[in-house]
Length: 224
Image 1 (spheres, rainbow, N blue to C red):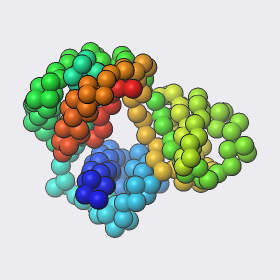
Image 2 (image 1 turned 60 degrees about the vertical axis):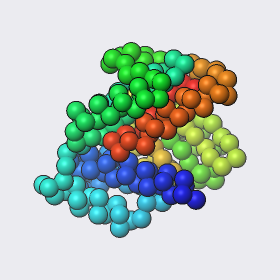
Image 3 (image 1 turned 90 degrees about the horizontal axis):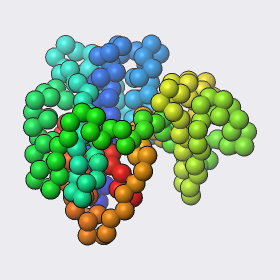
Image 4 (image 1 turned 180 degrees about the vertical axis):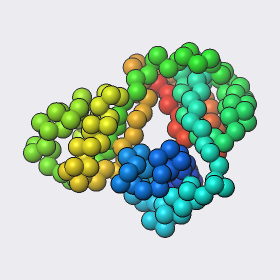
């Protein structure tokens, strides 16, 4: 239960920063701010209460609110597993020092810019409830909008696009009034790494430690 609560709290903090960045960039009106519309949609998908979303928008509109910078750090977890760390921070000096410490304490190492990014592809990922719409009816339109791959599991329908088609897909989703659980640009590994169970545990301990940092938004890796 506590782990679930921690995950929800982390998700709300991450979306709150997304809202803040969006408002600082293009203002507090969703109709004039595509990135803010996206953040609000993701907040809804994460079950973030509307009053918290409204409060985050209001807070971001005030001059007292901190300016968050988006920074990506690269490194290796134990056993050479490449890791990308997306952060939103009001103090990059503090953040880079903390991320470096997390890596080194857990048997990893911080890398230079570009040292592992080439092993990942920036990809649009749109997740829906499985019954959100009739795929047979919309599949060709989704492909026209930029869908590269469409996956289904027991609960979800996931659409992948190239980086450059992310905006087109988002516009299509809005035009059809489809409710996505989340719409995000993610780093998808081009290859994955197989490790023993004990080695996987060491890698995940490093990643979990990094994820717990308040400045960290998302951590990507290529562990199979």
